[in-house]
Amino acid sequence: GYDWWENHEFAIKAASTHGNIRAIFPSDASLNLSATATEGRIANGFQSPKPTSSDVIHSVAQVIGPDAQAVVSLEARRGNIRIDKLTY
Image 1: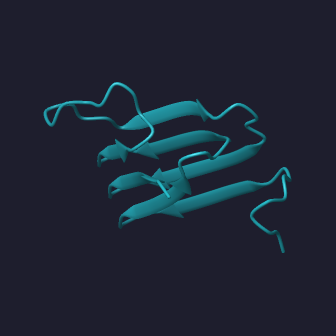
Image 2 (image 1 turned 30 degrees about the horizontal axis):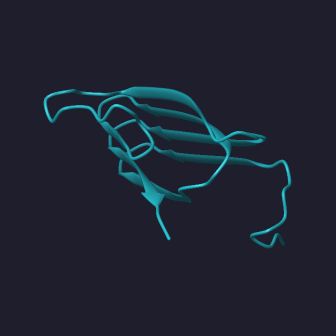
């Protein structure tokens, strides 16, 4: 297991063929993020500038933070992806 203060390389992959995915990361997270919602939308709390409500985003590839060694891959074929920034 890992404790919050430890810095290790790791990868997370989440996939759904029919359903939504929600991921929550701390505001100071460092990671390589890729997300694809083939028939849905992506709401990304780390995106700047914020998209308008009429923007439809199906794909995201983003480096978050200064030391992005972790890799996060999210794929929802028939569903939406929501990526939230946890501020504490």
